[in-house]
Length: 565
Image (cartoon, rainbow, N blue to C red; front, side, top):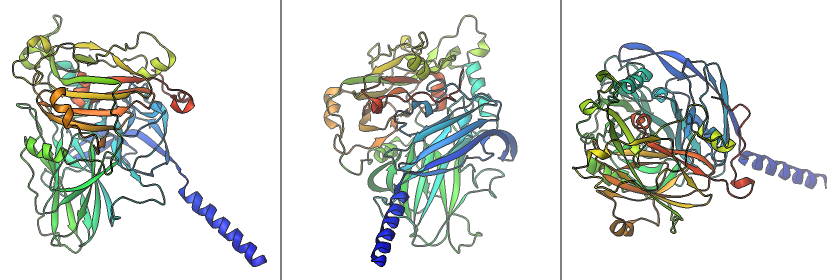
């Protein structure tokens, strides 16, 4: 009797242990924003960092976990942190874009971001969302499967995050402030980086080149993140094929490729088999440049994939990367993405929207000297969606104004379609269309609305591949193409069976992409180009998603420590 009772208690105790091991955890972290001397390319400058680290700390969680990250601002700049790609269901106050969901964290102040990872697995990242501070304030956010579940592919022997970045010898905040002052395009970067290091092909960089170890026969899961400020990037590993298994924390049907292209903001998970001769191989990234006649950083960043027992005296092998303007490679890569399984895509659309995305030129104000109008032909560069150049408020955040009913901060008249229909990708666009109107205009969505957005690139000033990111949502990319979107012809080609689920879509140069989502997350959610120069110029808008019915469809109350403007 005693034995059976003890055994029963033991079983009960073990089952409790087992259950507790699958219970979601709460992780606490402190991020100290501070100036840190960083030496790159033979020069040392003070960079804004998290905890003195560049890049910042990698956060690793499981699907279902809650993060509480207290950010202490000990720098001289205002700052916010955005958790790129996290759905933030009902926790819009933790999303992070400055003056959209919160006022910035002022120097000497702190704020705790609290949110739960719900139904997402794979690779996301975090970054500053104030001025150009994300040039150095960023890091990986790795979401492992829920304890007790596994990857939908064989478990890799090792996992490595490779975060692609962009480095300026000058202070990046000074770079963008000078551009805003002069109306010109900002100075291009001095290097690209992998995990913060430029690599062998730059001056004074060889010793610190990142080395990724591997054993023959192993499979490594590479989590590639494009954290560059303004540049889509090609990525390749010499002599090795890459099997794409995920993107933006969603699994995809595996496909093999030699080259990745990631727009800023995008992540791609790939499996690499160590099936080559045990040597040293370069991991390399360089620009995909789709805008014609625009200056860009044409350098190449490298890390080294190093097989065990390889002598370091043998020089690594370089991969063959596509030409800078190889849009064909980008198109063929982009069209291979499909969701791992068939998905439920909204078929009936409640809000059918058509947004043009592109650049513009503001005429030089009469009271400005020529030194402040150094854009094309004495103008100032600008950008817009549907001819509205987005202006952030400065006294309240948009979410605060919405939540507290504060008038005069924004309007809800963002146009559902361009105010003027024109040949968007043509070569003879009227100069009257080059100058957008400025405004803080939101588009209102009822809770549960089924939304389709056509994102149409324009050839105003120049056409370009624009990585468009939507906060607070993932969306299905149901179609993409070149030229002007034609609903009669193009809708029939949509993939409504297994389209990829992303948070950032690379809108093709001189082309279009169509996304669909259900507005099931109340709050104010920014949609913008993730080329940071373009968001600064106004290539953004925001959705105001109303509350639904009951607590689970309602935005949570603001936290007590929400920063004030």
